[in-house]
Length: 259
Image: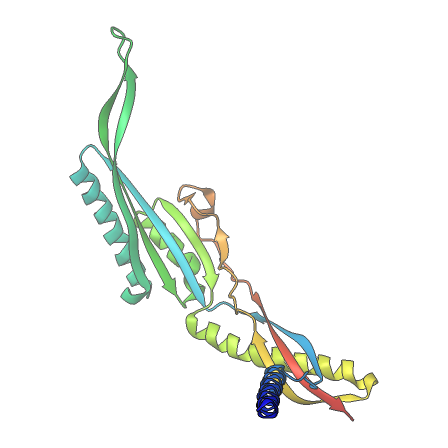
């Protein structure tokens, strides 16, 4: 009877040991499966650049019109008449309606401050209303810049808010596609030059990261808020555009191997 108990106890202990060993082995196998093998890839990371000088193809001119009258209706009417005259003049210069836009119309009262000699208190008196409005020209007729300025001022614009040159969306896309390819080729040339003395070569591409492509801001010709009475606008003035330098980068991770 005692011998049978000993045999049973030994069997139970053996089963426990086998189970423990099996669980440990499974845990080790799972740990090994979860531990990634170190990468044996050889790589080189290079940043390529590309720059080009682009001639702007879009002219932007914004005229401001300010009118002041004793009543709001009269101020609005006078402003509307000036805007219509400006638009009519610009259309006569060959500018299409699609190239014209108006925005930022505003009206606000004008007060005069005075001091009452009896009460010595300061008071305000409404003396009129001022209406401001803008009309913008966005055209590819760069050679018409001086004529557009002269025509707008002659027709009633009493402020010039902006004269600048920029790139159209179509030209931006064209330049972007061209520069991306050149930046990647530049990165490849840099990598090949670096690997040449090391007796290695490029055998593939692991990743490419392109920089955010940015168009430089429009090139201003006149400062914002210039008044039409300034000498610069009293006679026809030649207006010339300047090329814009645009730059982009591309980071390329190349796979490399021995020659």
